[in-house]
Image 1 (tube, rainbow, N blue to C red):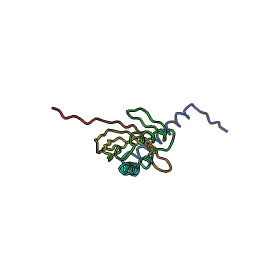
Image 2: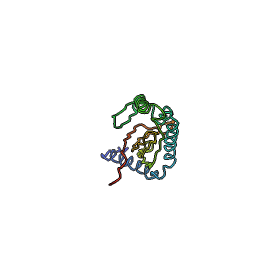
Image 3: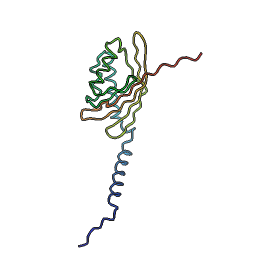
Length: 164
């Protein structure tokens, strides 16, 4: 019986095979082909916008991962955990007048893998006392129950002043 001799090529061959498998998946499922995922994430954002506009912070937060590992970065620092993010929203938006009417726009979807996405966009709040807005980047993860925000980085961007 002849013995099989490992020539030191098994590990590199397995690595190359794994790499090619991942590449074939990515090429078979480019971002354009992720319409159902994009629609699912868009539906969560739409539900958040509707909840916000009726003054319902609790329903707005359903779009976030309910975990101590959730993070939110903004001008006041980093809020950690679902409870910390909830407390931040409740403090900064204590009532419907402070919340105003929310609009999301200029959404860009980048899929980072089969169960992860980055969504960039703009937000705008129209309130009785003022209008504010800015940009956001949301990291999404697909869970058995659907897509959830696992990290939110939101910044206020001052409106451009007209040139004299």
